[in-house]
Image (cartoon, rainbow, N blue to C red):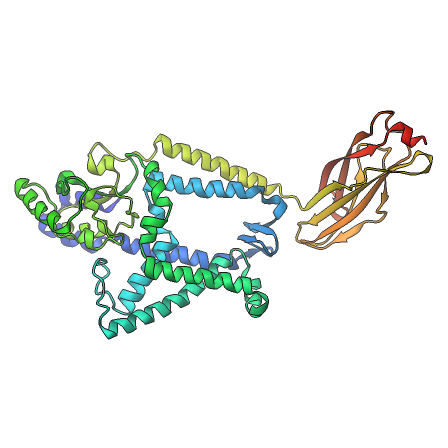
Length: 486
């Protein structure tokens, strides 16, 4: 049940003079709920790189080790067929969230928004007092004062320190923390890592301190995509023009004209409830007026809902700006339909992708084998003996060492003459082997051309033959019969 519904039910059941005080006392602003969401997201981002299961991380895409760790399972780079499923799940998940809750990602979980709140509301406003109030994001501090200039420098230094921590945390998803701290102890040997760390930190500083919300408005591609994902039932911050009155005619924006026109409108329409206090405007981090309707710049932070709820609640009325859909809050055509076709379709596709991801992840191979023919097709020895040479590349993707060997499983006329002995490969290690297959039997009788004979190679770990076993197809090239009989 949302705040607006609570207000309406309270109005119906309580005396009006007591309703506002009781409701506002129990009401929890969306801003506080967002802070909790930010805290949870921050803790997850900082803690996740440190969590390991059986020596593997929850998520790690290591270019150094050429491995993907997912839910405690390590996959070799040759097993990155999982990445398309992860990317599809990520993008379709964001699209699904947008269809249901608008730009909820932007207002409630995006690092850009979280960083701006920490810097603007936390450091500049609460800690240093550069801004007088969190609820007024339009008034800039007077930087002509020496005191404010010093505070600004302190704010930049504090954010630079936090940016280095954020940049390091980002890199921990690509360079595990245990390796990261080892590498930075020898910066001269890892200048690329140091450069990337400083580059990311510098970008965060420039973005949060100087670009600010312009990143959301002009740079972020998601804001351009969102409008095509919306429908009449998408939940977002919506102004009710039927109760509050139409503030705008057209799309022009002049603060003074809008204010004066609204006063005239209230005279012409006595039932219009908007007080023109503009609390919803002053609190907006992207500097828009929600009364104008759906806008590209809105990040669904719901600050305007909090502002209007406070003002209208004090008057004993429900908020004019609600977290609702245009169907419900603007046109008053009934309740928002959350279980509509679009949402069901997104949910179905996401479930299919998730099932596919787990199914493919559960069939992880603990050994990888690449079989390649050498440039020499064959070698003919005395008495019609024919040899073929191959290069086998073994990769032990398991977490412990194993002893390997292999055999030809579908042709008893072809024998392995090299190597003769089994060999051991350490955990996560690779080994190349030159392999020679030989036959003394006549496999073909073609006088015009060489004949490729299909061969199945079965490689296995001797110590765990039932678990670690792979089959690979290749060919044994048998020469023209006249070459064999010479």
